[in-house]
Each structure stands twice: as structure tokens, then as C-alpha cells.
Length: 525
Image (cartoon, rainbow, N blue to C red; front, side):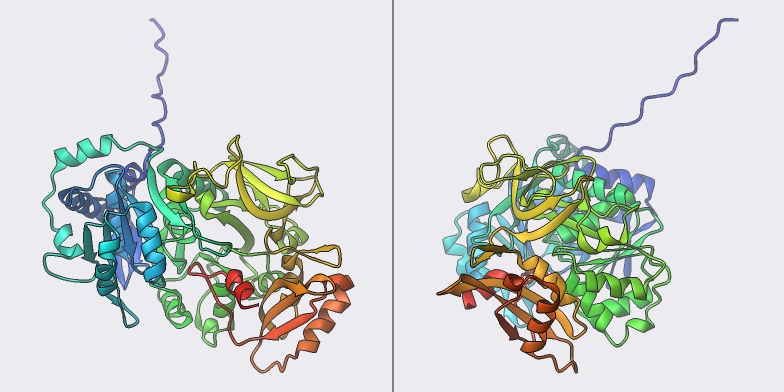
């Protein structure tokens, strides 16, 4: 009898686009809850089917591959449905914040040539519809302004009721390529005029896949997402990571500690994630002890410098959880560096971790030359989720001639490839001939028991050129004084690193992504 070799079909290729990933998730995890919004569970099959119908509605507005739409909304399922619907037909979403006003929106919508804006009618008393109508004459590309939360003909609800045209939709989906832009996110403006990063299907999925694999995300996971969806912390680190890996995302409309704690009581988290500000305010809240955190297996903090004091408080509150730092940028489509699982406590408390396997890192000197381990230089990245470039007026900026992303962040790498972040290049100041990195000073001040938050900048000085000024939010009831902060620094830092000026504040300006807005502090100074 002739031996017939066994045959195993080759593995199916990974879905190349976000729409393909959603359709695959709808088939494989159809009845599983993908998203919880306002108490309602939305299954993977629901998201896929509803976004199909909404995609037909977008085509009815004569939107097609290469066009762009803007979304001004909270973390809500309508936002996600619009994003998925647009992705399926090759339309890019321009992520906009409810905190933006006319000057910012006019610049972003004009630069991106956005053709339609989907918006909340009002938020906290501000009328977006009226504002967009005023801006309309100055935005020649803008053809449609549609209410997310309205009713009637000019509403998202009406558009979502468009009859499904399966053949037309299928033809549109076949034209979408992995390297098409799926989202445009404008940098938060901490270092100047915002630039529109063109995040592609490929870059978003690469960043999400790398994070999902590193954090071992699975169908059993539950994460509460307060990071805004118009930012990579929301759309990639939250939504797309779980699209790739599975699990349920509980949408927090916008960060309010009371609201997030109530949601965490209803849906026990297995992953806790957020920028340091969010995690700090949660731990300080009087009702945090009412939340069952025993099921949390992983906590990660990103979007800022390492805050060792915060990590210590998190470890004390959740000793069963693994703690990690996360580093990523808009231009990396999400995370690109995270703390390894086998890290030491010293690595956790002082470093941002290792680049993902799919990323390449160079510590670059002033001329772009590679610097040796242990030398402070600018972090340059390639691979993983690094975007091809910016769109609009900023096209061609921010990248070296051979394609490296120039992050503007300073850091050094040890012999094992672990990165210590030194802060923004523009944050560094020179006091009396010595380089001072505010990130190092801030990390020390955060360890003071009477401090909630700190931000350091350099300010002009007639003798030393520049000196350090640090803004500090004291812990309520601590009776912290300026002299206490300077004394604390003098005990642990070289004298030239001790801030000459300390300003106590009740609050600090924040960007829409939840980071301290240092550009506003520098402008004030």
C-alpha cells in the first residue's frame, strides 16, 4: 500500500487591515462581550455587523478610500463603530478631543482636509455644532457636520440605519491596503504646533500585536479604558490590543475617579492601566478600598516618566499583580517599550524597559551618530508601530533621511538594552554649565511623602544661564513648604540639580492625553 503523507494546510495569514481583524473576531468570538458602554454589552459580532451597516452610510455621504472624517466624542461605543466603519472602507479617522476649541479644531481640520465631522452636540455647556457651523466657511473641504447624540436626518442614528449593500461594501473593502492611513492623531502640542501623525492599518496593528503578545492578553481579561480614544493610549493600548488578543474593554466616558471606581465595582478588572495622573487619583480616592482588585494580574503605567513612588503604592495595594512601565508615542502608534516580565525591582523603579522584539532602537548623538551604552542621547526608533510620517504641513519632518523616528526624548541604554528615560530634549536645561534632566528631579520629588505630583522646567537666570523651577502639588493635609522640597532634593541630588525655585500649586495644566502640559508652564514662566 502506497504511503500517503499527511497534509496540514498552511496557517492563514494574519488579517492585514483593522476591518479584517474585526470580521475575524466577529467569527471567532462572536457571542463574547467586546465592549461595555453605559451598562450595555456589545458582542464582537455586533460590532462587526453594525459597523458594516454604518460603513454603507458613510459611502452614502460619498466618502471613499483616502478621505478623512473627524470624531469629537467621549469614550463611547458610537466612537468605535465610526472608527471600524471608516477603517473598512479606507477612510481615516481624525481623532479630536472634546477639550479642543475653535483655534485648534480649525487648524487640525484644515490641515487634514477633513470632509465630515461627527460630534457631540454639546459637552459641559459648550456647543460644538454652533462652533463648527461658524468654522465652516474657513474649511472648504468640510461637507458634513453630524451629531453623534442627535436624532433626525442629520444624525449618526439615521446614518446607521442605512440599508446594507453587501456587494458594494465588499468591493470597497477589497481596495483597502495595510499601508493606508487609518487614523490621524495630532501630537498634543507640548513642544509646539501640533503635527498630524498618519497611523496606518499596519502600524496600528503592529503596535497592538506587540503589546498584546507582551502583556499576554486573552479572552479572560477585563480592562477599564479611561485613556481617550482619540489618543494612542486609548485606541491602540486599549481597544486594538484587545481586538488582537481578546478580552473585554469597559469604556469610561472620560476620567472621573468616582465614575471609574463605580465601573470597577461592577466589572472586576484583570488589567489596570493608565497615565500616572489617573492611577494616582484612583489610589487617593476614598472609595478605592471598596473595589475588589484581587483579580488584577497586571498593572502598567505609561505616558510619562517613571514614577517610583506611584509604583510602590501600586505594589502595596496589589501585591499579587505584575507591575510594568510603558513607553510609546503617537508616532509609534502605541507602546514600543515595556518592562520585561523578568525585570528586577531596580529596573522597574528606574527604567522604562526594553523595546519590543519588532522594534529597533538607536541612541543618537547631535549628528545622528550612534552613541555607546551608558551615554545620554536622543531615542530613535524603527519598526514595530512606527508610522511612515506626518500628513499635511508637517510632512517630511521628524524622521531621519534613512527612516528613523526622532522622538525628541533623551535616554541611555545599559549593556542589557534596558532604557532609562531622561525626559524631553527640550526639557533639559543647563545650569552653570551642567546638564540637568527634570525627569530625574521629578522622580525624586515624587518620592516625598507630602507630594502628589511635580513638574520641573528650566527658567532664565542672569548668572547661571538657567535654573530649575519645579511646580509641586502637595498632598492634602501635609503642610508641605517650598523649603521642604528643596531640602529633600539637597539630601539626594548634586547641588546643581536642586531646583532654585519651588512653586506650590493646587493643580497643574494638563494636555488632553492626561500629561502635564509643560509648554503651558514654560509660557507662564
